[in-house]
Length: 67
Image 1 (spheres, rainbow, N blue to C red):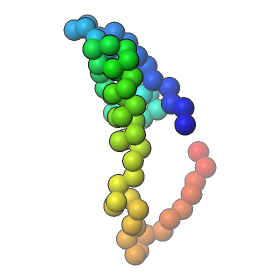
Image 2 (image 1 turned 135 degrees about the vertical axis):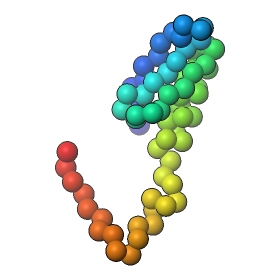
Image 3 (image 1 turned 30 degrees about the vertical axis):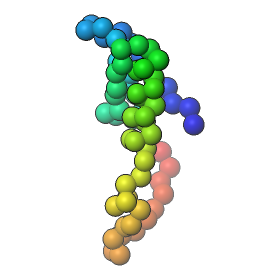
Image 4 (image 1 turned 90 degrees about the vertical axis):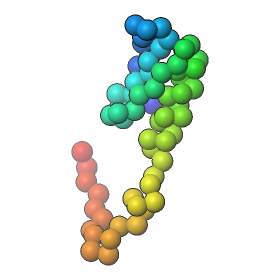
């Protein structure tokens, strides 16, 4: 899976990495390489399903919608 990341220099030094497609997914690092490694880990954690997501309540309907 490929995800676009915005990597920009921070005013304090280092880099900030933001994933526009995943709101709230942001990280930073002292170097470009560190920021990219950190955002990769943040993306993996952001996309990791939570146990609660796997077990809908008995009254729930599971539907798919097109957007």
